[in-house]
Image 1 (cartoon, rainbow, N blue to C red):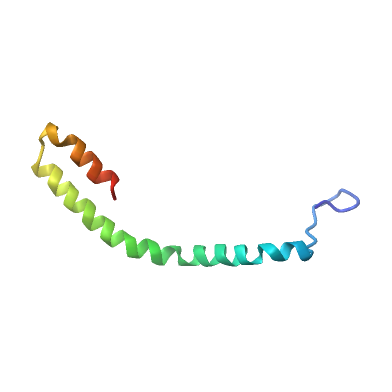
Image 2: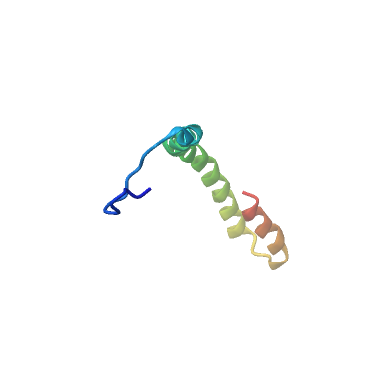
Length: 75
């Protein structure tokens, strides 16, 4: 990784770096698709949490705490 005179790092790819090519491509594709996935999931999650918010506003019974807690963490 370091050059012979130890002044600056240098990267010299060889045949062993080919095994990482598909991982790098998959990583880049995942990063480019993140916004699409986020926007797709955001709408459904926001609807679910609005429904839970309305449920919490109307039902303030402390006996149903476990059910409410599990509703939040099932999402």
